[in-house]
Length: 267
Image (cartoon, rainbow, N blue to C red):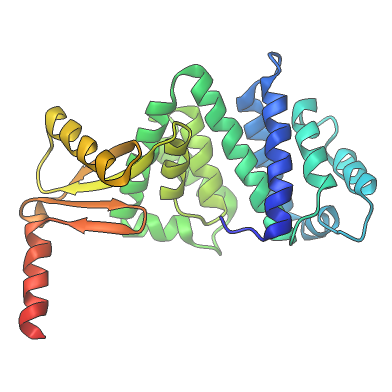
């Protein structure tokens, strides 16, 4: 997510308020996350509301009052308190305000997973869902089609994954698909909750637990931080591994070596 200076400051204030709200023993992080993402849907549909809430020429109090007039009684008070901070801050654009609310919703949902001890499972499920979508071109096109009705996409996600994954996983995937964003970003966010980076590993054959531990240890030494492995098998590699950490790719596969050799011979 790319934000300009004003939006970064506004998001920082909102994140602080979210942390305060979620620290209250009576607040359910999952409810706050669900409600914030429902507000993202609303703002995405209602252009006039989106612009009014981010209108820097209007007073802070009038923007807060607008949000409460629209949402009071429909969402919980803790969520309204977070949105008070959102509406009362200056954002660089309406779109960045919506991106900020989405980020807050994701954070609240991942906090709920942390508290329930399911964050590991959610991270693994997000990775598997991303790989399933990536491996099915027709599914990927259907989910990324900006002209498709939101309800059709929502039903598709629920039909494929709802009874197979954690509720937080389903909610995050659904919200991300509806906004046309990449699913791998969710995997990174889940890993960041535990101060880890993600290594996407493609192997020609399944790795044993010992091999995974050795690879994780080596990557941790290389990058100087804890690394979470997400491994998928692709026999077309012929042998070896392809490891991607962020934008960096380490290609130690047989297929990769052959391709590099062909390029050298051609050059």
